[in-house]
Amino acid sequence: MSLHFFEKLTYDEDDWCILEDAHIRACDLLGEPPVSYKNADRLARHIMKLFDAGVRDFEVIATIAAHREIILDRKATYH
Image (cartoon, rainbow, N blue to C red; front, side, top):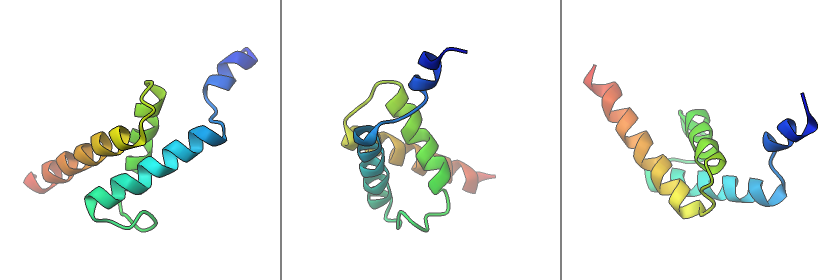
């Protein structure tokens, strides 16, 4: 494997700031504390996927991720 492949899988300090801001904002939109939100890992993974897809605006990332969480929570209550 080339080093170039691994460089694509890492985030620099600015990237982490965007990811963190998006996670905090998404939790705020959900009305949940970022530290103790029960699905924080799932939310973080989706935020990272959006970032990896090229989205860089933390508000856009947070809004999409929070909306997805709402849908997943609703689906879980239907079963």
